[in-house]
Length: 577
Image (cartoon, rainbow, N blue to C red; front, top):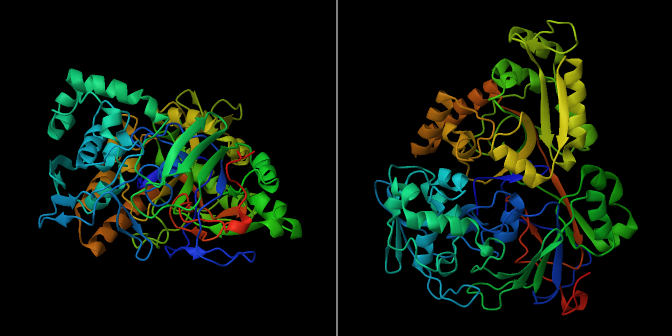
């Protein structure tokens, strides 16, 4: 699913520019046209939660299901055109929609001749079913529904699929084609439980009470194919060995340009040193993210350079610490601002990330035309932070070294993933000096994701990756704080909501930019997150691969275009190690 935002486990990326993909340098390249054969074994640092686009929350699920351009196992309606970086490349529809003059109706022609991986024909019924399912309030898909909140009806007439909106929204076309990967109706609703139920009934009161819808939702949420997807894309799901690997096999009957590699093996290795050891031993071909210390100190020299290419790439997004505003410590914006000013982000980037990144400012991409250049990062300024804490009433009234207010100690827990240990240790020490007691809690990614969705945390550090077309509604609108939406920190601000809603309705680029500039100023003042940094990523991969490109979209690489010359191919029918 090409959502506007998706969660990353450890680190997000600084978009240096929305340029076309650049060919990676490879001095060992062998000339000739692309050929079929060989496998790629790619390391993931965490395991997908599920492989269902309506239910998944982990970014790695996106990577496995859709790759970089909306087409790997499942497919969306359209994809990015790398020549223009606009979503104009047709996938499961034949082209861009006809749009009504009032911007309320979008009509597409459904692509003919496509088949599901099980051989059944694809049709517009699958698109209609997917949007019904995605908008079903009984499914755990609140983040999906937030992008399609203006969708009033979906109508199918022959091969024409029509989307009707309640009001004009500048993001509607993008959200329609880039939010939902299309699911097979015959797999997920073989009984036809929602066949006779109209789209308007699904999104209305009936959607929560109808017995058939309830039965469908229960079956869908627990469906075995949530772990064994059947799609239309260039790769077919083969197996999922929990905790070890997921294997995708080339779809020889794909309707479009066929992939070259016979298999994509997703090897799950949570430990970064172990992953680098596996890369150097030839057990992994692609390590999409190296730790900064690995890039700086552990992946250089003739032996490494002989076998691997090391390259930097960028994806728009940001790393953050989120302050749950349901907690008494974080209700006052002066406190949140003080917490940001107590962390030396420049030193964090220079010393821990070896210079890979830039200090975070806010949620809009720095290369976006909507980015407000007048906003500067809050400085590292402990004295001023102390003043803000005092102004907010957090003082050490009883002399025990910990600030308190109204009888409540300023003592909280900060959650993070395994690769947050250094950040958490730095934060704990800086806060201790300021009279704040912080406890660290390192958890597995899916555990962290559940805690965030259910608001069972004080503070947490994670990251968001975002698309080139960005709508802040899912993360920042008050409505996304309920129903397990992505507003994990319970940020509820009436002016912020108004600006987000106003921007959605403004089709004039310049006027919309001015709205977003004001919204960024508000977020800067409120500091619901401490925006840590935008960062560069560093990848390493085997030199036997050619046609390697890096995109300014998550996950940054398109394995459907990679190939290996016959003379360098490593895997055939023999299983990988």
